[in-house]
Image (cartoon, rainbow, N blue to C red; front, side, top):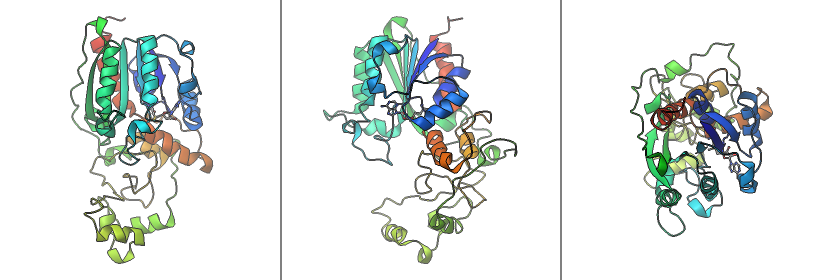
Length: 336
Ligand SMILES: C[S@@+](CC[C@H](N)C(=O)[O-])C[C@H]1O[C@@H](n2cnc3c(N)ncnc32)[C@H](O)[C@@H]1O
């Protein structure tokens, strides 16, 4: 089961597929920080911009995975979709699929993909499906929540699986797993000898804000008088700003929200329930289900912000493992 991995990042998806028994023959990502983590833990990775890679440089494969960049589609970013040139990177996936014709194709993306318009005004997801169908694939997709697959995080993502028609098989998404042991209380108990327990310091303003936020609270607990001016403006007109839930501080009895690459308290739940600080690198790695043996380089200040980025960008390892295992059992069942 030879796997080609595009947009591999630091290797969350790759580790999950490897644990399920797939044999990666080629991986690619042009981000230096992601490459460094990938090499340290998983092995070789091609470092070129995928748009510059000739098709003959990519080995044949049975399965191709691609978590193409999500920023153009995410709610946090702009919504230019395919007009943003990163949005067209899915065309790179299509180019490679058409030449290599793997048995199975797996795409991962943010929820915003489902509402993004293609240049012709149709939905991008419909365009992707019809492109893959024309290339000879039977396609299913689903908006899933990672917490339904053993991940201690409410993280909604679109997973699309294309199966080459001549296999005469179809894929169905695995049943959700009961959400036992997914609260922060289960996740944050880490022994001191586990590496990368360093946190990216919050700004003085953020520190002041969180000192007024109780466990389980958010910026709504901060008294109006002491809010910074820009937050006062939003509080004055919550309807206009759609009642944002900034500075969410999840309680130890909750499942954490989505960890994002920017790791800012304004756009993700990144504050420790009881300590006045961001989650440290190991804590977000655990929320993303990286094993404690997976190392994030070193704890130097110049590395630390980059590690929040690569971890926030990753597909949770456990989610990838569950999808990979279902693919293996349903579509590669006769492979020994
Ligand atoms: C959402 S992340 C993928 C994370 C990965 N699937 C994982 O599980 O860790 C998208 C990745 O695409 C990479 N990328 C974006 N544009 C690229 C390009 N033109 N060529 C190669 N890699 C690119 C980024 O560096 C980033 O690491």
